[in-house]
Image (cartoon, rainbow, N blue to C red; front, side, top):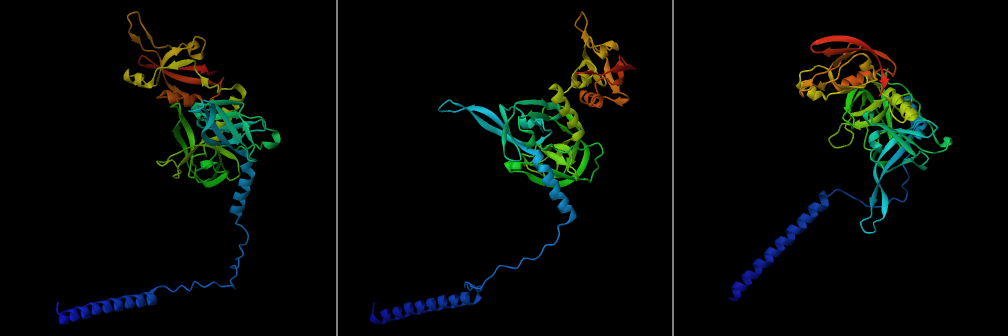
Amino acid sequence: MSFANRRSAGRQILGNALALLLFIGLMGFLIWRLWPAQSGQLDPDAVARAITPRGELANDEKATIQLFKQTAPSVVHITNEGVARDYFSFDVMKIPRGTGSGIVWDQDGHIVTNYHVVKGAESLKVTLADHSTWEATRVEVDPDRDVAVIWIKAPKKKLRPILVGKSSDLQVGQKTFAIGNPFGLDQTLTQGLVSALGREIEADTGRTIKGVIQTDAAINPGNSGGPLLDSAGRLIGVNTAIVSPSGSSAGIGFAIPVDEVNRVVTQLIKHGKVRRPGLGIQEVPDQLARRWGVPGVLILRVDPDGPAAKAGLKATRRDQSGRILLGDAITAIDGEEVDSSNQLFALLEKHAVGDEVTVTMWRQGSTLDVKMKLIAQ
């Protein structure tokens, strides 16, 4: 390359370098001018912001605070423990299977919760509001109503029984409050309304629980077995379930009405089981009765000493040729129609053992009424 060519190439490189430097300088200037100003300087004279006086709490806030203070000591945390064997040492050890909430029912150490909270437990621990923990000494359950009673041997002074209200006079729109231990958090309060009454949910046994309270008070995992309260701080239901695809509260929760809980708990404490009023019969599965074209609840067996036998009701049986001879079918109780076993149980449970009811039955195409006195089953 000649000297002239080398000189021309040098000028071009120098020109390009100067142009690049000029561009970088211009961009730096623009960034400096347009970037938000941040002084980053400390102020040694800075003081805390003045606090604006709040004034008095609203009356409904005061009422809610008082409700929580009054009721929280009556709510407990329940740990369901199972037994597992260590893979390496083969030692047997207790492991948590789940948790829930419970309610101090009385000072005799009875704790009320859901059946599904204690289901399958090898042992149960109850933690009171003062954080003392007690082993369950006995558990009695009613799976059909998702109710359980746990016995603990805590001193009476540690047990604050909850105030018990009633559910028969509830109205949609009343305020509700739920206290429990969602996600293992201690004593959480949520607020909502009675959003519907007379709902139905299915228990673990497949039986229908009727008359359930629907609320939009947030009920999350761990709230099960805890109390649903009215604005007077009285128990109106035991929180049992939520409707949610994610497993967390979605604004629809259910509680077993306290009138039902009160009846069931009393029987569990007295008898260790629920003595349900019955007719002394065993029912044919509803699907079979429908297949055979029979209305109501078809009777499979009749207890020899029960009220159905005394009233002359007939059971389904086979003749000498093996043919099925259909028995009587119950189609109404006190004039209320019966179309399934579930409905029959629900109607009978409106009564007590010893009550007399009028049973309407179907017999080979004709109907007749008979009176029966209910027995415990």
